[in-house]
Structures are given as structure tokens and as C-alpha cells.
Amino acid sequence: MSSESNPFTALSEAMVAAVDKAGSATVAVNARRRLPASGVLYTGHLVLTADHVIEREDDISVTLPDGNTVPVSIAGRDPSSDLALLRLGTPVESVAEKAAVPARVGQLVLALGRPGSDGIQASLG
Image 1 (tube, rainbow, N blue to C red):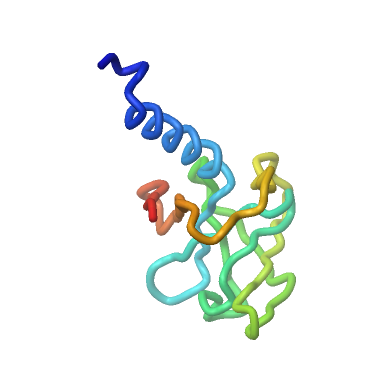
Image 2: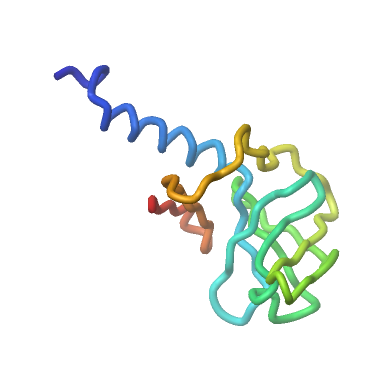
């Protein structure tokens, strides 16, 4: 079986493409004492992350996919939904895209994170 007709190779290549695309909108959030967390560039000025990772109100930054670290401020927090929005001082171009179709229970999920300066990480489940 050639690599072009192998469904596992095709799935693997599709996952690589998805990580490349979504990874360009995934940032490291530096808002706690130890390791950074991950966030998503929701719009050109906003990063969506988990509220529980915001352990301080000042001196918060995000590390962008290109490796640059930029300061952010808290735009909003909702502990009941565990969501927080961080505001970038300068807009970025690469933002997450809305899915073309809604997710369904039982679908495979490719989860991405940028837990530091080592780059993007992905897991399938």
C-alpha cells in the first residue's frame, strides 16, 4: 500500500496540518507562580484562557507562537465558568477560527497546548 492511499498516513498528515493551523492561535499564558498555562487568541486583541490559571492581577504576559512575550491586562473573569479574557496591547493577526460544524459527543478531539517556550503540544483523544 502506497503512502498516498494509506488512511493512517492521511490521518496523520491531517493532524499535522490541524496542529500547524490551530497552533498559530495558541499562546502560553504567564499568570501564575510556576509553569505557564495555555490560551487561545480569540480575537486580535483578546486571549481566552482558564480563570484558575490567573493567580495574580499584575505582571501578566503571553508568549505568542512566534516566541515574542507581550504584556496583557485582564479584560474579564468568570470563576463560575472558569473562563478569563486577557487584553493584548497590540493586536495580532493569527486568531482561532470558528469550527465549520458543531462538535458532537463521541468525536475525536485534538487538544493543543503551549505550556512554555518549548513549542506546541498536542494529544488525541
